[in-house]
Amino acid sequence: MTATDTHRVIEAVWRIESARLIAGLARIVRDVGLAEELAQDALVAALEQWPRSGVPDNPGAWLMATGKHLAIDMFRRSKRLERKHEELGRELEARQEMAVAEFDTALDDDIGDDLLRLVFVSCHPVLSTEARVALTLRLLGGLTTDEIARAFLVPEPTVAQRIVRAKRTLAETRVPFEVPRGAELAARLSSVLEVIYLVFNEGYTATAGEDWVRPGLCEDALRLGRILAELAPEEPEVHGLVALMEIQASRSKARVGPSGEPILLLDQNRARWDQLLIGRGLTALERAEKLGGTRGPYTLQAAIAACHARARTPEETDWPRIAALYEALARLAPSPVVELNRAVAVAMAFGSAAGLELVDALASEPSLRAYHLLPSVRGDLLKKLGRFDEARAEFERAASLTRNARERELLLNRARACAEGQLRASHGDDSDASRGS
Amino acid sequence: MRFMMIVKSAERSGFPPKELMEAIGKLSEEANNAGTMLGSGGLGPTALGARVRLSGGQLTVIDGPFTEAKEIVGGYAQFELKSKEEAVASAVRFMELHKKYWPGWEGETEVRQMFGPEDFAPKP
Image (cartoon, rainbow over all chains, first blue to last red; front, top):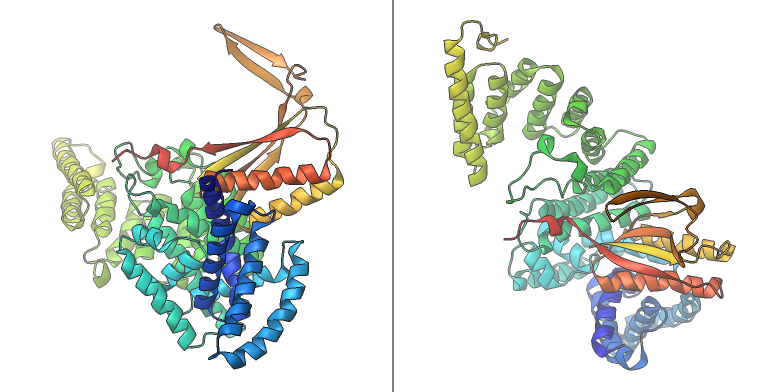
């Protein structure tokens, strides 16, 4: 094996092992920032030694042992931390002996718990959302600062700063390295899920053809979600989020056309949906629902996504069920956007007039004033009801609100089609549509 | 990046030892918990299968067993990983288990990258 090969192997090992390594070290030194530095030092040692000695049989255990030795050395050298040294040094040495004995089995039982602690600390509410995202990708996703910067389209020093500050904040506020319990757990868990879904969406909304680090975020988020689902198998919303992400990711090949244009769900070629991911998503949803209790927002959204995933053709879509799920979601997390989606589902299930009624109720909603999908949906329903003139005005309004050139073109085309529809309707004398049935 | 691992060996290798199956079970569980293994499966004997071949403009259906084949595909697994190196590392671990628990067994794991959405993206 050449030195370059070894370096590439080390890179791969780092991807696989870094989160567990940092988590294990953080349990010992009780400081996430310090744990990451020690893990990095262990990596440097591997880069120095492995090209000469060859890659060890169990590279993860080697890194962990090295990291722990470095921790002991550091405590011994540090005079300022003398007292901590006494406490921890003894404990460490005792642990060290135990740990070495355990390395052969490779699977330290505590590692799972350590990882879970690391997830909760990285997503601690004391940090800003940006900091949570950066720290989670860095410590748990094994991404470099440069990769995170490219993914979020910000300069690398900004990300580096965010991570440094986040680590400092965690140390200064003495955030304990533990999994929250009782009443705190629910709030803290929702912060973790929010970070993971944010990472996923950042990747999902990235336009194709750009730097593929961005869509790579979907995979990072999925991987984090899947890990979390095994670490916290009793939490239904974790499975709900995983189900939602698996099903959304299953459409990634079908949602962009040959020249980069977005393809709407109902227009997608379903043969290009990834059935492996759909299967995984449906299984995760089943796990969430089996755990019982009130379905949370992620599980409800996953259940909606599952309705689409189960339909082999758009016509087979169970719209009444989707409408009911949106209603449940609206009760749980009321939002005008959810309400608009419910209106679309109601229109598909029970007719355009019923949908229009819900859309009209949203007309005075201030947060939707500049939201182009409101007039776009309204235009669609009016057109189906044969009210072409009103529909045309709505499409034109929607076109003036969207910032996406391709979408604007699409909306203006639909406005023109309405004008033609109006012409035909006024010339025909027996058009049902013109009576608005 | 998605990878397909294809495991090949001689068909008449006999039943794998229980220890190997247990070790593979543990490895699979680990990969599943790490969010990297998407799915896997084992294939039945070629006696239950068939080949549909197009050659020289002629379609022929050949029923199994495929006695002339030296090695046949016995199983597969799909992984989501960051690099080919990660995939090879994963296949090495899998084969190490065979080395340890099934002395004398010979075969290979073929590591193949699958096309992902990025390969279908329009070129900028």
